[in-house]
Length: 76
Ligand SMILES: [Zn+2]
Ligand SMILES: [Zn+2]
Ligand SMILES: [Zn+2]
Image (cartoon, rainbow, N blue to C red):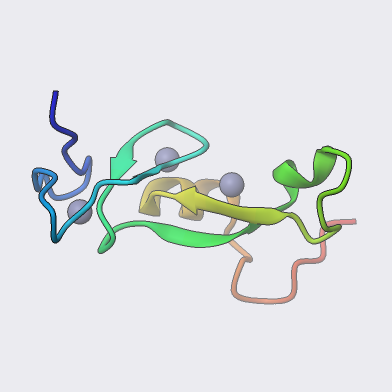
């Protein structure tokens, strides 16, 4: 089954790999619609950097879960 971007429904091709999946909702995302930034939810594992690992996000989850991602990530 070919992956399709959940945002723009583009089908995966060689030039547009749908190789990212939102780590919150599991939507497949094309390079135009994926937002990658460190997520503290990924810092729970031993050996991960404290700022978190880069995680793929769809625009919805970026807004929902990371509203302050552009500012300094102060959550405690
Ligand atoms: Zn897309
Ligand atoms: Zn999502
Ligand atoms: Zn996240």
